[in-house]
Length: 161
Image (tube, rainbow, N blue to C red):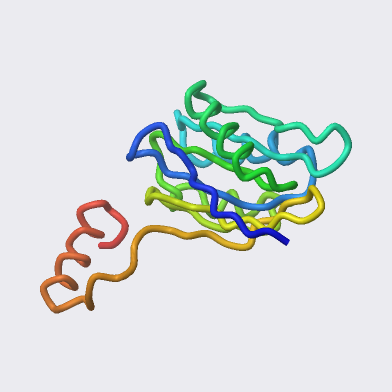
């Protein structure tokens, strides 16, 4: 078995990416519907790797560059039943509830705007995701000033009152 670390390339630093695993060709259409219902006017691209049959990367989206970025990421990962969502004008927190409720979605590996690497195992022509490397190691422990800023930021963004 060979272990690989695959970097995910985003079109720009403000793009959020969601990587997960699902189990059926219907995944692409159901994720599309969940995302457009979650955020009006959302911009995104989805790609899904079939694991059998024609083994195509199925894809759709509302913005071509995000759709192509999702395709490129899915191809780079190369693992069956993996999907990639590139989000343009929304955050994962805006869509995670709806995404998790899609019947085909088995798991979400990550949802992040950080630099990501997907750890992939490869054996006899098959690939699977082992995990995700997301961001950098901690630089310290939150102090009282950091805690106050975290509370203030969440309220500025409207996530808390």
